[in-house]
Image 1: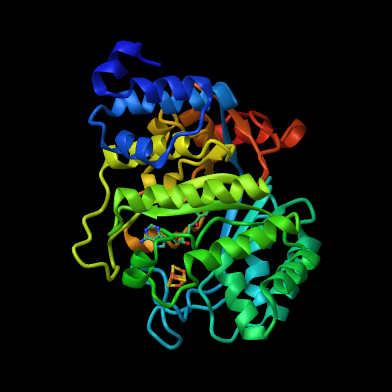
Image 2: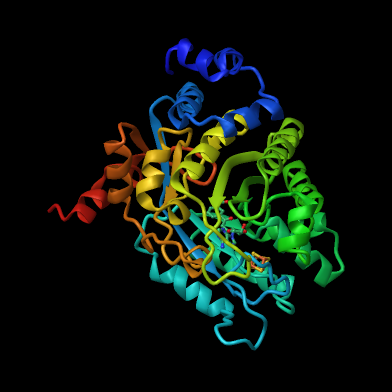
Length: 381
Ligand code: V47
Ligand code: SF4
């Protein structure tokens, strides 16, 4: 934390006091932080909160991403990943092809498989149930983090079921947790401009509320840096904060900087590094009840994600492997990182790397941290 005189000069003295006392910040205070020209002063406040919560621990996960299909009925303007059925570049994996991807990595000590796709017009819920239970049989030890709230609502509509029924059926088939995608920015103005076909912000919050009520934890995201105002970003954060007060079901928040390439967003400017770090810091300060904040290196780049660990983030996500959504929109990052690379990035930033599972439980013993696998990745004997 910088000296109080710095914050007094910036007109942020009372915000500093509230942060030190662990008090909730208002939207108006959030706006003052966003508008503050001193990035390091805002970052230092967020770092204070982050170290109060997690000390000098930074988490990572050994995981695998699988996209079952990019065919989607929604056609969001910011999405470079999706295609209509029959369009060039559209793909759809069979259950066997997905299982093959899982088998290919059976030798890796993966603890999480992240599965999402577009809102496919005719893939049935029964197929996804079969998929989850088959993966469970092959890898009983992994956590299955699958299907955004948007996909859950889509399955419900196709099947004529309630979203609660869909969640219950998928959980019975092996679902552990929902990823945080599909939240974008909840503002109806932004959704009307960029993704009018998509589940509304209220709808997203309702599906997630139901998941939490059923005991299914979720993450939450915010897609920023397109057409939204700072006020709309803050309202999005506040909606997440209010739901978390009710349910305590969010595990981790992931700010996603908009990747503009191959999208249909007019005048897409893309985000700058300062904007990304400030959004991470303000998110950490506003979301006083969501325990973890992820610097998702795929969208931020590996180098900025490492720096973000000093701006409020306590997690670097993971090995990932085969990410498509960000890379098809021009994300200028690697396709995968090894555990050794993640540990090195974290340690060089001055933190202690801790391998976690989807729920941020520490992975220990043979599987976790600097063990034989890490040594092998380094090329040691
Ligand atoms: O739902 C789409 C967003 C999300 C673009 O929960 C874009 O642990 C940037 O949600 N530029 C998918 N973002 C990614 C996601 C995620 C990733 C890693 C971990 C977790 C988790 C969740 O990406 C989509 C959408 O919100 N997105 N297009 C774009 N052009
Ligand atoms: Fe479909 Fe999701 Fe892309 Fe929107 S962001 S078009 S819902 S895949």
